[in-house]
Length: 284
Image (tube, rainbow, N blue to C red):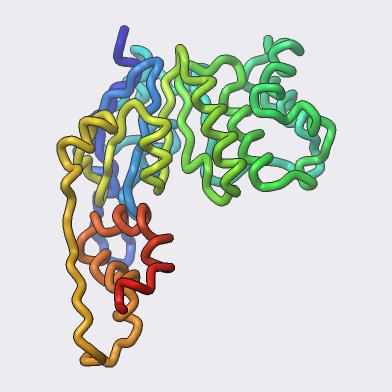
């Protein structure tokens, strides 16, 4: 079956103070395919982590359902979790245990038949073989993320969801994590969330852009580039100190101002922030 995960669902969050409900995810219909990496892209509050929570069964959908490998998440959650790997946004690790002990611990829960050869292969895949006897408390942030990713693939998980797998790591560790995900891509359905356009473009076969809990567009990076590549142009002309808000004379400050009204500026700023910070010629 080509389609591995079918999702059509909504989830409402209850606000006691206002005595009303707000849709965190609304009428979201998505299909994820085997052998492909799909990125969920969007600003803070777009609903990315909520989608991950729905996919992993942490939250039940208010309406609709999720089908994973032919199983309905409302009735077959236990069976789904035997084939599901999860890398949460924050590492669930124990500082006193070693890297190897973590894999043994999670392996005994997720895949009791996991062999020593598979454990050693997992360590090699994430480049942690030489650190396997170190306590996790002595590892860098990038190493901890790679360990969390290795845990999510224990037992040959057929579907793996990762919530911001490269969050808070240095550029070298980020690239190492990219290599790991591309290595595990074959025969598996990978779903991950990210804030970074370049990361989504490099890794993904398909990108789904979310805003306010709704799907705005979905397709391959090349399709999205061709369809929406023209984007928006913003022309800036310096006319002197007519505004008391001096910070607006920095082009990044203007873009941040407009970001609150046009979320597309967020993506433009992410791509060009280094240029905007350093190019003084814009106002010469």
